[in-house]
Amino acid sequence: MQFLNVGLSGMTPENLVLLLGLSFFLGLAFEEISPEESSHGPGGVRTFPLLSLSGAAFSVLDPKYLSVFSVGLLVLGLLLFAYYRNAIASPGLKEQPSLLVPVSFLLAYLMGPITLKEPHWVPISLTVASVFFLGARERLHHLAETVPRSEILTVGKFLVLTGIILPILPDHPVTRFLSVTPYQVWKAAVVVSSLSYGSYLVQKILSPKGGFLLAAIMGGFYSSTAATVLLSRRGKEDPSAFREINSAIILANSLMYLRIGLILFLMNPPVARYLAWPLGALFVAGIVVALLVYLGGEHKPVDSEHRLKSNPLELNSAFFFAASYVVISFITIWVRGHFGPSGIYTLAGLVGVTDIVPFILSVAQEGQNSPMTLVFASIMIAASSNNVIKAAYTAMFWGFRPGLASIIALLGLSVGGILVSLTLGAF
Image: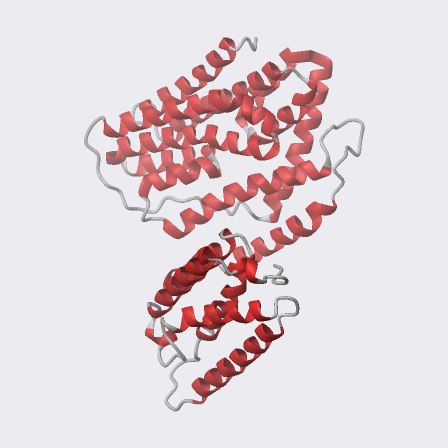
């Protein structure tokens, strides 16, 4: 951010009102934090607007070099240092004083020039984020206790590979046998793993509070196949919850279409826009069926644990997905070259027994060299085949009679995908 040349141009009534409102809001949030952190502080709710106004005024006095503002910042820092040192030396101290107090006052002082110079969304975003962290102490501590240390280290490794390795990977084909680039392969692994990890983390934190509904929603974004198997096994353990489990299985597999759309949008927006309404129609149809099954009779609330155990952000999982993407891309190009569209359709039906995302991405990547109807039909066949396999899993792990609603719905979604392809003239 650049504070230079703030000048009088930024000192407008609108900016002053915004600054007063944001700083007062920040002061109110500071007053609401736990007594252990805010007691005996150097100021209260009135101090925050005064600090922000001081920072704004000092930045205007010398907009070129910010000498007055810098001196004020130095003085404030010394005062806060003296406060913190005195707090540490206080007799009868039960726990280490929090740095939250001095940091909050420094932020209030910096809000002055930030509000005058930057677009309004910048100070508003800073204030909202600060208020969140001020009031989320217990929740953040709970999060730190809930997430295992091994998973935090895994996220750190993955961020290194994403932030450092991804930018330096070549974004051009390295072999004439593949049109996909190393950059695209690893970007796909990052997108899919991150989306799956987000749902996995939510389940890790909230389960068992969310019940079957949470398992279905998050399972649809994590892996609809894994969610189907998990819920089917749970249905066998608790036969009385057959209505809830049936609706959860249908919901999870409906969300598969939304997950496919999100992944395509992040990787290949033109293909995602072309497939938006068919995927959206199947998604809505599945949601409606799940709701009808759930409301079709009496149901009982269930509050037991049913979450996915495997961390999808493990590096082995990311590397396995990247390798699968490369292999499937090579097979797709080879099949298309030797057998044409009929070979692609056959391959789409076969990959339904595995993770269909690598195949979907490889077909979408080849969309620039293939008719869009071929791309769409291949994706629909793969999704439909995958639904048929999941219907079989439901019958296998739960039973045909109790899982009948899920089986019919999954087969119906499969038929719906094929009919939509026929309507668009894909065959």
